[in-house]
Amino acid sequence: MVSEFKFKNINIKNKKIFFVFLLTFCYSIFIGKFLWSKINIPFPENISIKGEYFYKKHHQLNDIIRFIIFITIPIFISIFFFWRLKIFNFKNIFLIIKKNNKFFC
Image 1: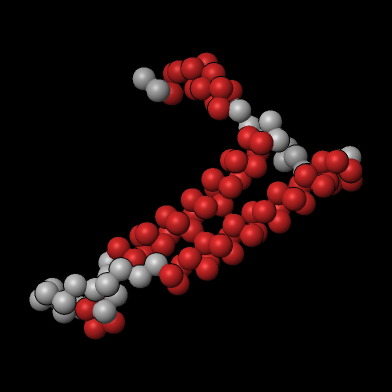
Image 2: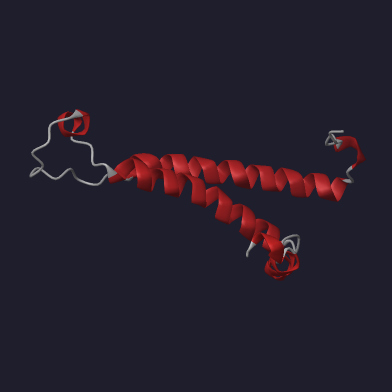
């Protein structure tokens, strides 16, 4: 049985928190998208292997760094948001890991 998210049963305070979180999350995605074009590592000219990256002068680490930045900004902002609202607690995570120790040898 799949549980559905029923937005009608949430009180006004939780709706405001949800919308603030949603706006913050979307804003963090736009920040990541803005930084995407700013990340540009210069291509080294001493590479002798010819290929698509060589012809377009695109450094191989650009995509990796862009992806990491694009993913981590919304994650860190979401964790900070929940931590500030006392919804997310690092102690609880460690207790859950300790309680379910069978997954970690």
